[in-house]
Length: 365
Image 1: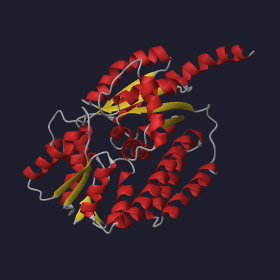
Image 2 (image 1 turned 45 degrees about the horizontal axis):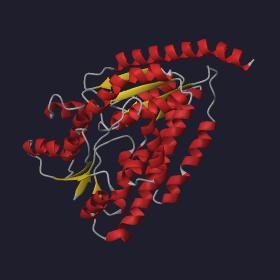
Image 3 (image 1 turned 120 degrees about the vertical axis):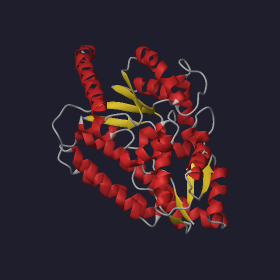
């Protein structure tokens, strides 16, 4: 058995650690690229959303490389994610591939059941693998947050990216939970040692929207990195660990934080619409009240929950007093057009901040 899985941010490092510790052979697909998207789009329904097409491309590339088992996610509610595994399985079988597919639903019982199918052995076998994967998950999220803070402050943002990649490689190579956690401290020291730039104080922009587009850098056109180079501290509202703690582990602290976000959304959207649509609304309101300069909303073209959010966000923007930019992504999205919109939005926020500064100074007097 050789198991593969889709790319989504740093997910491949976490799943590789989990499965190899269980003694399962893994074959992660190549990093998502233009070729991946072209392959997936060729065999997908035209109106399928971008995550469907890119993950299908991931699976085809991995199956061609020798994988015979696909580990993927299920879903619940109105979002079409719940249909992905069944439709992708039919497409791949029609193309002549022979494989098994396991779809993990967002609950602990489904995680346990599917991992037991891959590597029977009970809790004693599973617990060390989960500990290592959890430690790597926490370390990778800490690395990404630190890099987001450091990019707009560094003289050369590309130096931050180089340090981040070294830290991620150290986490990937770690064989013990403690070693994974220890990879974070050298990263922070290396970031602190980078020469500082002399530009204006960084803007703070919150990133909301659909989790796959938010986390998969190829799909979002390296949006977080590009904004960092423009002098912006980007604050993603959901990293991989946030999703696991909230939707799978249902950790009390994560659930309380999620409840506060949902409560902030209620004046604008009072019920669940699937995916992260209602959270895009709630996070925008919370960040407006927390002093953020702006919000960028990212989502796949045709994503129903986020299209609903997109149509509500102008009202949230006006009521809460925070600029919002919505960006839809599909296989036709070009980097040049996206960068132009980002530059214009950043210029708007800088002008807005400069205009507000005299008023703030007057109030202090």
